[in-house]
Image (cartoon, rainbow, N blue to C red; front, side):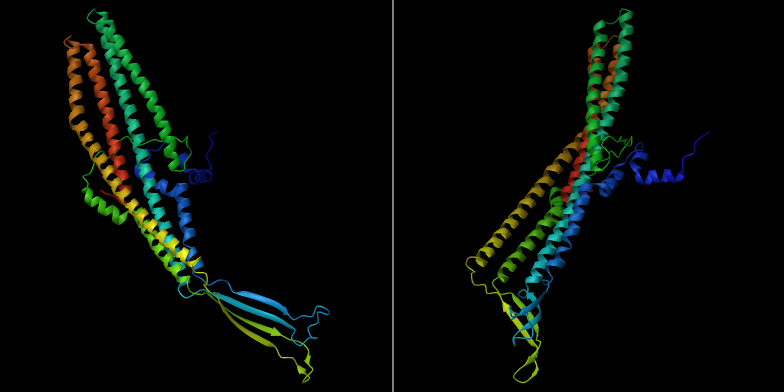
Length: 425
């Protein structure tokens, strides 16, 4: 009897384990980016940190909690009576600490700037994550095409072996030609083993970025866009990086927070206040006038006295100013690093782009024609077999290098997007 899969169980599997259902589906680059943004735990952790930081401002910008006090004042210890002594009181009071005007606002501003910096950290992490995903995807794409090129060349070498064997059997070839072709075939098998191992390692790293099991098989599309765009000048890209790179914006928030910390340290030269009130309940009768004893009320205002400024506030202000200078230097250092990164990645992209064009339009077509010509010449004994094999191996190397530099160009393009802070295309 044919078994029917319960549709509810099937739907559950699709929702809970989509990676298992779609494991054999080709994973496009756009899909990989989406999965990484949705599932990467590092990005999620950075987002939760930013969310936590956004809740600090309201806390530090609020007044401290008021203090409620309950007291028994002038209670005689021989009888613990509340009516025996005229000054015995049961008191209830409340007090509120009030920082000097402006301090709470400065503390909230510092927290706001740090929260903004944490949010920019999320943007920076996302940029780097997408760049790593693109780089890993193109690595696997290159390895797939390198393995495909090897497989195709293995077939060609086997054809060469059959041709050499046929010519050897009829006395028109040499046994060493057969052995040479078999040796080159063995070399290709060795390279294939290395590339398969490299792909497995790259696959595990790629799955980690997508928060998927490391052993999950990855299948990429057979083709991808091989066109490489022209980009703006280095000066224009540098201006874009200064404007859009989250890392630089984060350092600006650090500087703003440091300025407010300096202002807050200057406010510490002024006193903080404490305002309170106490109500005292009295029991019993006043013997002097035979009346009930009246209750007492107390109002209290106290303040701190910044007396030891030379050993406390002065040093705190110097500390905050030094931290501000350090933050400004760090910001400048980050800016120079970003501009250097833009320059280096752009140079790498231009180099890979030029090589890709050279291989595609010049070297590979020429090498292909050379192999075809030598094969025809070898069949009529006009070309040495060694040169034929060498020309085919050279063509294989050029084809492999083409896919490698194409991947490198796209990886550089991804790194340039991350360096600038937005798409440069």
